Image 1 (spheres, rainbow, N blue to C red):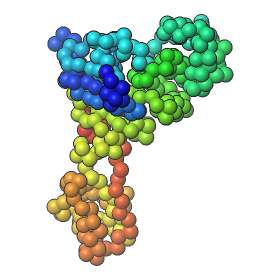
Image 2 (cartoon, rainbow, N blue to C red):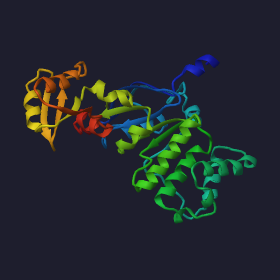
Image 3 (spheres, rainbow, N blue to C red):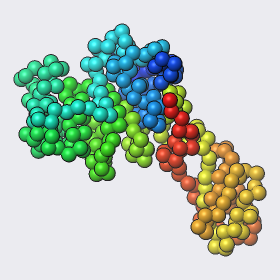
Image 4 (cartoon, one colour):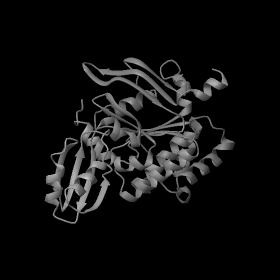
Length: 318
């Protein structure tokens, strides 16, 4: 592969990726592109196919059909090359609780054939990156769950991979520990890493990730920018209207309008769902004013990623 082609190759490219377990289809013709530098959120219910996808990308599972490439390396034909450029952290990973933190990381550094002369500095660097420098001499068994997750991140960083595959990295963490892990991921993206993170903590993915994919029952139902999810999935265009007068009078004016699919009074305000995104919401103010009411507020309801996810999926799993 030429230098120019290497620059242009995506971090991950799958084509009709399928994984069967007997008669069960865990992954159904997944075609997906993750660009270099993405902090990519992989969203789906339990059993939707997220872990299967990550395990195929990490070369632990072979696809039944289709292809997958990581930084231009086929995950089946060139698995060794893939393993050198990825760091994979499963949702549950074993730690050697009787080892010290530095011993643990030194062991994995040796597994990746990092020369002993470089391993000490590498261990110090990754511990600093994940905020565990002060715990370098501690026994792993004495670390909190959040610190063990950060140690897991340090382990997958030890060989300086270009792509991180993180399966539910904040699972089981308290709110403060989750925030700390997410901050580390943002720093890793800033340092040039490409990161794929699966998670159920959708509110955090909304602010963390620049692109997301939503998968349901093994099928991809959306991929693209976070801000494009609502528009592409046509989940509704919601506005709130407030008037000086009784909200019920505003509701009577707005509900019959042909552009409105649903309207209801909620706590003295009117919640209006427009039929699609082509509708100009200016008619809302015009209708209120022409109806003799005093408009005091009009704003769009920005749906969160979690609400969009609930609307566009039916919770189907295998």
